[in-house]
Figure 1 (cartoon, rainbow, N blue to C red):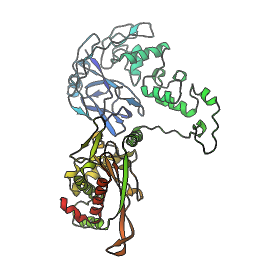
Figure 2 (figure 1 turned 90 degrees about the vertical axis):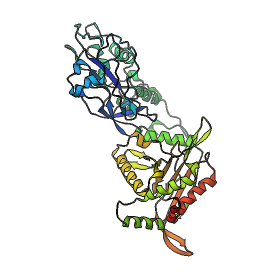
Figure 3 (figure 1 turned 180 degrees about the horizontal axis):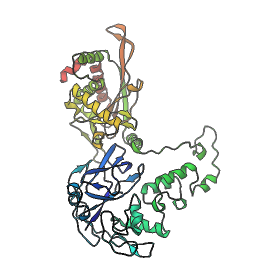
Figure 4 (figure 1 turned 60 degrees about the vertical axis):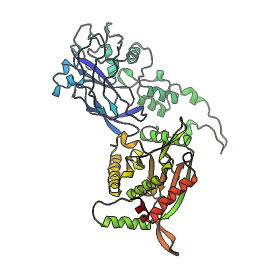
Amino acid sequence: MAQVLEFRLPDLGEGLTEAEVVRWLVEVGDVVAVDQPVVEVETAKAMVEVPCPYGGVVTARFGKEGEELPVGAPLLTVAVGEASAGAPGGAGASGAAAGGGGGDSADSGGSGNVLVGYGTGAPPARRRRVRPVVGAGGTASGTSGTSGTGGTGKTGAAGGAGGARSAGVAGVAGVAGVAGAAEVVDGEVAAAAGRLAGGPVPVISPLVRRLARENGVDLRGLAGSGPEGLILRADVEDAVRAGTAPGRAAAEATPAPVVPSGAGGPVTAAAAGTRVPLKGVRGAVADKLSRSRREIPDATCWVDADATELLRARTAMNASGGPKVSLLALLARICTAALARHPELNSTVDTEAREIVRLERVHLGFAAQTDRGLVVPVVRDAHTRDADALTAEFARLTEAARAGTLTPGELTGGTFTLNNYGVFGVDGSTPIINHPEAAMLGVGRIVPKPWVHEGELAVRQVVQLSLTFDHRVCDGGTAGGFLRYVADCVEQPAVLLRTL
């Protein structure tokens, strides 16, 4: 007998709590193998393909493309066992153990592989209670194999006679008349029953409830566009944009307080302008930078440096043949040498233990601007790489960032960040530290300027370097020593020979 298993959006790591469905890779009725990617989602970190730990036939999908789902929300259901035994390579048998009656969840060993940072081991065994829902014919039906027409049929991969597949979010509402529907959590069944009986508000997603609460929208007055009248995020956003959200009319009818010119006060709806949700990469950046400002007492020092000799050294390296060495790679090599001299800046602060943790390895992050926003890929063990290896890794990570294929592991774990904002044509900046790191080196544009060189006025290639550091891990003397060493290496690259 087939067993229908539910696959939920897994925890993709690094505190991510939600993901947006970008593209479904399977349809209802498709046969999937163990660890086959079934959906492409976008998190605040990267775009990832999520593989399913079960093999069998897809019986339901949850969530439309463009919809945000919280971690733990259902993604899809898969029928495994005898009904999917015909799947190539025995997908059904390898996906989970068949059998188990009386509504108990199956003992599935999962694939055992690691998928995008999460494991696919078996979930803890527990008994789920499925509440019957009154169907159109007045008969109770659920997932026990009884059809909505009162007849009895076996549960199959695509449902028995008189049944139909549940699709999309309708996998919850369909329990009223679909034979062979997926196992459903008590809360979702209750929500479906409430919809059919005209009871509770037809909302499943906590994100939709939060959005409505923050914007003063009364969900009871909204007509949902989802299956069975389910209220989706788009419904709430449309109501907010139109200014016709139930529950807002009374507030908007009240005249806004008059604020004298130049004085502070509340922003009225008329002056609010276009609202752009802080979500995805932009939301993650906002959260991280805000946390950095709240927790880290930062300070910044800067210095102008003559980069003429560094540019000449790079030209000489690239004239010798082989792959071209990037300027960013040379700056990264200088950073790792400076961190070896001043390890205080390659550290983090454990606020709970009130300890400074000095890190032995340098995982160098670098800021990269992409169409999705600002991301910071990380070069692992940068202190062990030479200029050629650093150039290759920078190129690989930059291409992946632009394509949106960076993994969460490639975007986390940095210990120091190099920020080359000179590519935007600016000379200086006071960067915000990439929490929980302790420092960031900023590099401005390199431009010809008048400079006193060997006692005479000359035109030289000048760059401004700035270091923002966590004042808890060191004082200005250490930060100044670090920055001065970096500037000395830029002005006289031969200084690096001491550390090679």
